[in-house]
Image: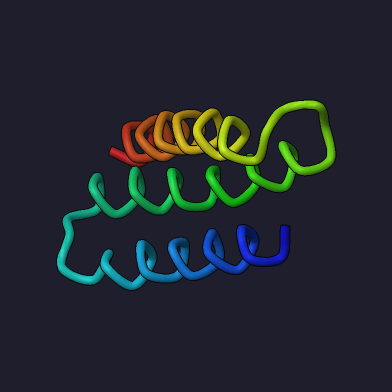
Amino acid sequence: MKTVALALSLISMLLLAACSGMNNTEQRVVSGAAIGAGAGALVGAVTPLSIGAGALIGAGAGAAGGYIVDQTHK
């Protein structure tokens, strides 16, 4: 459990660090996906869902949220 949480944390940090050369839309979508994956993994850890399923659902929701936020700022 701790190994999975550590791996997800490291992946999230790498994804956020990779946002430096992107345009605003790309940055918001990727950041939303990374944050959503982390939040989804936490939800998956405390519910009957698996951590991976929670992270996958959270990443999709976060990416969609990031895109919507970007479109509302234009």
